Image (tube, rainbow, N blue to C red):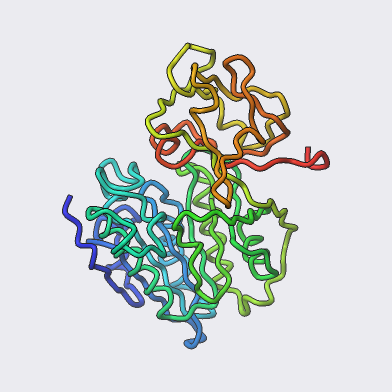
Length: 354
């Protein structure tokens, strides 16, 4: 698929004809990344939502379309809104919402803040160019907040992620969920950029979960109707979880899933690994199996670039075992995501949290 990485389309106060009958037709009407501006009561302020940075994470688009077709005709938002729909080509690849990025492409949410002249291969530079266009589309309106809407590949509870914990980020998170993860990981994500305003990422839940779409819709509607972002009443307490790390396969390591040890090469995770998204993994609990290379199949890189895998896991014969009580996020049986992104995010639990 040929992509024009210099393209970004703008649409202001869309009509029902622009929005089409449903979100799928609306998506298919787009030729590339699309910015939708909605006029609010206060014309001086903007609130920004980004969605579909990954083409297989539809909740933000579904919720945005529902807001524009159901709520907006009845109620004008308090401020201007800007919705940025990013990886349209990946999302429209058949079947719809099946690809994180197009075949031969790369994850655009690893392309922000990079100097393409030095850091990227020739075939990757278009994605950095698009990331720069998206970043510019946010900064040009000087927003008072930015919310980036995502899904997990597998079912799990909704949580927010931010690079800082402030009253504003906690309050915004409370409109969607009860958990905020403080992350200092450096991956080239949009969240790491400085927009001079509160920024949170929302992982709405599984990409096929109706509840995830509902959470995204409810959150957008509440943000749009809030008079003052700085004074949101926090409806429920938000738990803060500090600095998770990403468990990854080392290059060329094979990955399998199984109920029992089948003797596969590389790493084999339990086929119910997603269940850990809803609770904790206990000290000495087994998560899968490893071949003769043992823990050398895996890496857990901290902020300083050190592999701290041994601080979290150990090998018991050929089993991958938790060294401490751990909390896992975004554990998935989606093999493509697990290989190209990570197996899951993990933090140590203190005894009071168990």
